[in-house]
Image 1 (cartoon, one colour):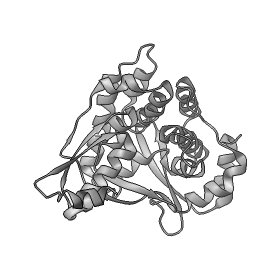
Image 2 (cartoon, rainbow, N blue to C red; image 1 turned 135 degrees about the vertical axis):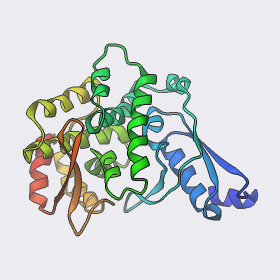
Image 3 (cartoon, rainbow, N blue to C red; image 1 turned 180 degrees about the vertical axis):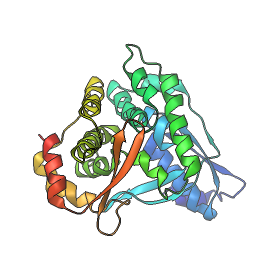
Length: 269
């Protein structure tokens, strides 16, 4: 294991660990750096779009378990994040689009100009990455350990993580989050917060980048089981980040399984 290697090479606090790869790699690297000697320095070099705009930014590190996604982890920021746009050339269109789901999220929760940029014929990835990183950086700097405001970065992730687990990770993280955003938008709209036009904007952007917007109706029982183990839950209630309008977020806690099933049926296939 990585920890065994750290011991074998006698990694000390004057050393650092470098994580080069996608989100799973940088998450693991940061977690190892957090627990080895109770904390050593680390550097993140994300090679995927999702890693550049999300996973490597903000100091959340962790690994999955059989009981849920990212339930084992620590807050431990890298001393530097190196973003090289040349890595994007190695990505498939599917992986780029999956990464764009996190960019879309940043547009909905904080910076509407991102949504406008995403409507352009030619995407400026440098600008989109910079804007998405700025959104996350501003949120994290005010709430590093997710006491409240940092939760907004989980928009679309509550159902998204549950679907990701149910699919046994055959779906990309961004693909699952895309479905989760449609669900969160439907939930927001059903509670009288989000307008019909902004709900439709979710569907339009998700479709534009060939991201999924629905999931199997027969998977609900399994998906709901994963929802009940989400790390944001409080007092037996499933906690969602919702939207009042673009750039304005809210929270909704739901205990009624039937209510969630009804919303899920709107996006199921």
